[in-house]
Length: 311
Image (cartoon, rainbow, N blue to C red; front, side):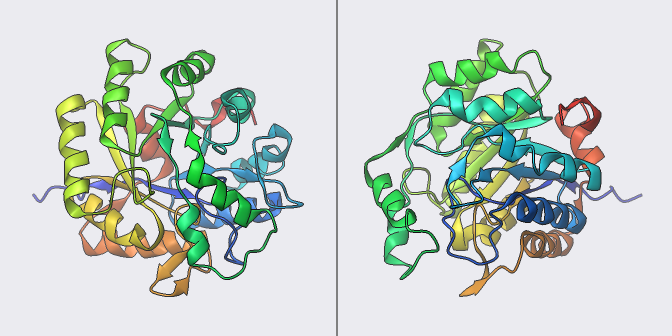
């Protein structure tokens, strides 16, 4: 009898607080738009929905729990998807502010950046002639001289603050050193397997997008964590589908969504998050792989269940 196809977890990051200024009319900004985008992505096959929030008046990133509270219950009622809340927010925010939504809502998963880095978005200024909001050009220019601070103390603070609520983490690793940082916390017993490692490729200041970069990240994670981790990959911008395809072929899981890329093809804006989920599902089908359901993802990641959150 042939082996059953491998199940691949699709995460969809529906709106960016950091990665994606609003140069697309399809990027959700208001709570209603975020809810609709998340529900659409789940219906298209995303097992995990990764969520930021924006101020509905001016589109700025916000970690105000009251804004998250306007879309989280609706997503929970309409889908079975795992909800993953950001603790990244924006490089301009203090870690205490960034953590507030995860503390209040106790999601099944929260993202956690595994090291400080130059998070450089200023090259976008040369690629776009106009922006939706007046603040965005200055925000992008400021990233020329901003370090996204995620010190060991910051990471310890997030891990310890959430230790009693059953939230597990999507460990976002933008470079090889971030894997070693995660191994340090594993050695200290502050994180427990299975580790959900999200490798991020294509952000200036982090690891690049060459196939050797992807292979190096995979080899290093295998050496450090062996069978104790679940690997997922995202590619920023135009590299999204190419990199996630490579990762899926290498045994990884995938993340797509308008937070990471506004595009679905050369020069073609993605009309929705759901469209990107559908596209990567087509790729997975071509590779002979199956898409994991939310319940299968919960089992693979040892999550507490959607009935144990605080929304």
